[in-house]
Image 1 (tube, rainbow, N blue to C red):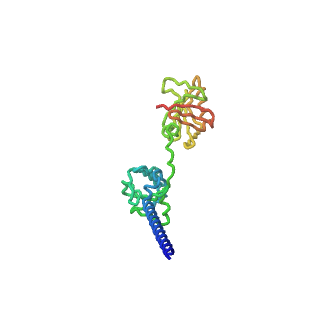
Image 2: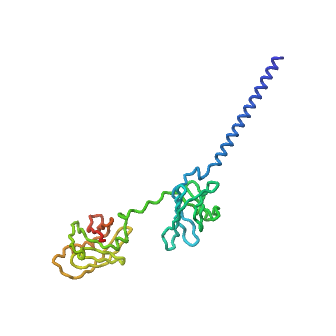
Image 3: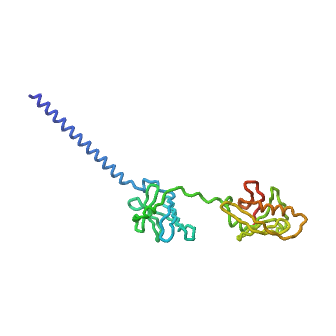
Length: 280
């Protein structure tokens, strides 16, 4: 009888001990779960997203085809560029300053903007422009208020390799080489061989004897140029070879290249037909 009692008491204590252990494990698990929830609540765009970078998009506009918008976010600083499309002005307006975050850490506020939207909800690789009160815009155009993170455009080409309209049209160019041979200019600057192109698509030139003039057509994007057969004065000179070669060169030219103060007239991809230097 005593043996049965001892066995029953032993079983009882084992059951109670296991129950307490299960309860403690359950309690520990709940604490861990609770802690994880708290940690997740701390995650927001400000501390968990790689939000700095270049964003671009076209925002709806009431009286134009759209507002091209570019926003650069750096640490604490922003650059905002906007341009109204198809209103006769192709220049960006630019504003710079600092920005702050709202309490939730999901929206940036651009400082210094008083007459337009200044708040942007921050998502992963995108921004959403909010209305003046900081609310998301709804309706059929809601998805148009998004700026996507992308690679910024390359910087403009250096002036030395970029077509220069002002330099090309308004400079007077001295002839230094014709058909691969150097040209001997006199020391008298008034008798230097040259060509000058004006904004009315007219040119004037001098190649050693007569004054020459005519017109030209130019496509700057493709760096192509074509001269029409021009006219000249009718003076007779002892040696008119250079002038004749110059006139024939103008009839052959179909493209040009410019590098700083140096200009070349070319045909296709052959060697330059003529080289010039800018007369300052």
